[in-house]
Image (cartoon, rainbow, N blue to C red):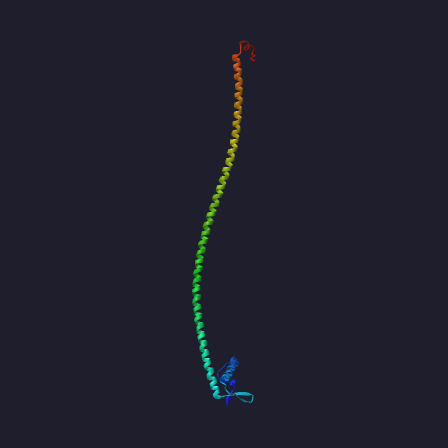
Length: 192
């Protein structure tokens, strides 16, 4: 008596989800080993001795595949551990860089505040200087106005002095004429 492909798959303990895939593996193994199949009705049967050969070969393949998957899984686990270690290192580096960046930004902010304070002081000094400059300009204008006024007064005084000198000269001429005049001219008061 023999077994069908389905029975062999069930004998290997395959789940119903993997049944189609396992049946194909069994058919492939039958072809590979060139096992003769007998037909009984509408079923193809495989001899029990051949069933054992197929099951043994497929179990060995499963063991190799499981071993290979286990190695792959272990390799993946090693890669995951390496990535975790790298991730931890990167987190530490990132934290350090963030702290450095915060310190750097803090220093820059402090420098900016210091420079802004200097700028404000310079602005205040400039405003004070500008105010003093305006005061000096006003004082200069007032002084110039006074100088102009005093110059005008001086010119007026000079003119009066010249006028006085001219009158004095005229009077001196008259005095000279009177002193040099004859007695008759003095009596009649006609000096010309």
